[in-house]
Length: 122
Image 1: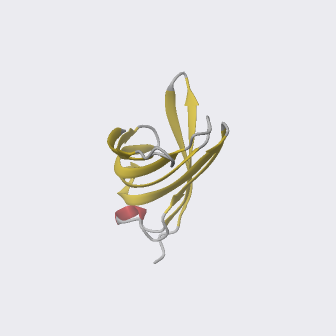
Image 2: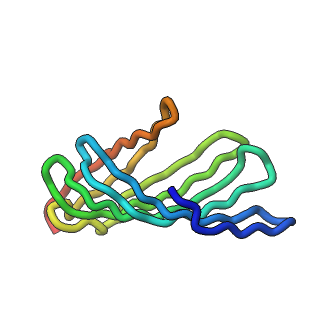
């Protein structure tokens, strides 16, 4: 992730924007690009973010694209995160993809798990 801009005002929560650029390995092989908007609060451990990213990948031998929508908050250190495949956003052999992604963290690295269904009927 690369910071694109930050908007800070002395009496309000600082807003930020970042570009996303990810590579996936495993059952999902490919990459994604997207944009993230953030809000940090004056309370330590409280913040929020939203993001949209387009994934171009092969999933179990099927190739196409799909869009992920993120919505995350942290309330005094307690995280709440939802990452969902945008309905009807998938293309190619991934048309009909629905599901959600979760992010894990271990040893300073992120891991991703995609739980999905793939209904090829249009």
